[in-house]
Image (cartoon, rainbow, N blue to C red):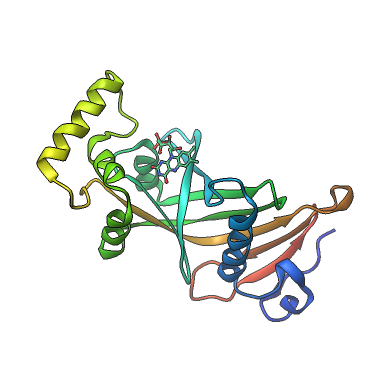
Length: 212
Ligand SMILES: Cc1cc2nc3c(=O)[nH]c(=O)nc-3n(C[C@H](O)[C@H](O)[C@H](O)COP(=O)(O)O)c2cc1C
């Protein structure tokens, strides 16, 4: 039996400890900060789900780079399979799972590109090898050999020097959620789950406690 739905601010008062607060982005930031202290590596790794043209699901890991006031941002190649699937549907989902904390966050939402100054700044923050790698990789396309990829990196290094501009085919995606669920391990598999939903970002979040 699920508890009745209520708006943020009413049921919010009954959520305590790790679930406290009515802003799901603040809760996500808090959980990620805790994971950064306890996970052995890549606490920001998330499994990103898309669907292809036939509706066949596709999942792969990407790194969550920003938790904004209203959205989650990751970076990738705009020619990749995930990008094509996102561009076709305008939607994606992801899950963050932290083994050390025994917690997960699930998100589903609408996706737009981040290909402005924010993407430029993130690109510029990466190591030179990573920046050149982004230029060299035709992500998700067949590759003849590792050697041909490294030869391309060397060629692009000569062409772009030590301060390459962000490739026009590489940038961010911003996922604006319609649904965020927080899950934490409980004794005897009686886990705690809270789902935040809203039709669009002008509305209040509806918060529902879910059965394990
Ligand atoms: C821990 C981890 C983090 C990754 N982070 C990213 C990322 O931030 N961006 C990205 O494009 N690929 C990332 N990858 C590689 C993707 O999982 C995937 O292989 C690649 O993006 C191609 O996916 P696609 O063919 O579905 O587009 C990561 C892989 C792992 C294992």
